[in-house]
Length: 250
Image (tube, rainbow, N blue to C red; front, side, top):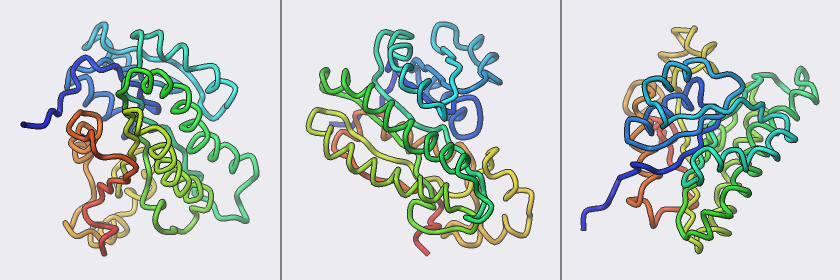
């Protein structure tokens, strides 16, 4: 039997949905016929996207680094389309500071947004998924889930946590039909990596580190996303899929 990569009419929540990887994910789901709730502090380009996909896209403004906001959000996310089938935790922050310069407030904000908010949302939204016997949670890992980078102590700690959180949630929920996986992007041009891509020598060096010989384009993430969102991945859980051109292979 040919596996199904269909996500049409699935109800999807994407955090960090107004920019970078999160925005591309919102676009990909809409193009594939899904219904999307995009969560971000401001709507940005989602306003125009909503006019292009009426009744398919809802924006909810929320600062997920404020855990009191995150804890109160689940009912609103479910109410948008009456259910949630797929949760994508794409919101994140990288302060790019070493331990000397990093304040405790910056540490806590990074921890809250990158690790605690994904846990809270997945914990709450997976309840109905488990009751129905099908669901998907897709977290965003990082190259720093596996290795250390300069000025990455807070970001790296949270992304290492995302890797183990993904495995632990898969262990707990997959027997009830909820597959939990993570996508680990390599270097892609987003607001988080803007400073990197402003340095042409560094961009060339990073591209040379990959097996393919180039850095990522956001479209490179769409296929893996739709695979992990669809019935085609029914026997895939607890995994980190690195979409990095082979960066971690060298």
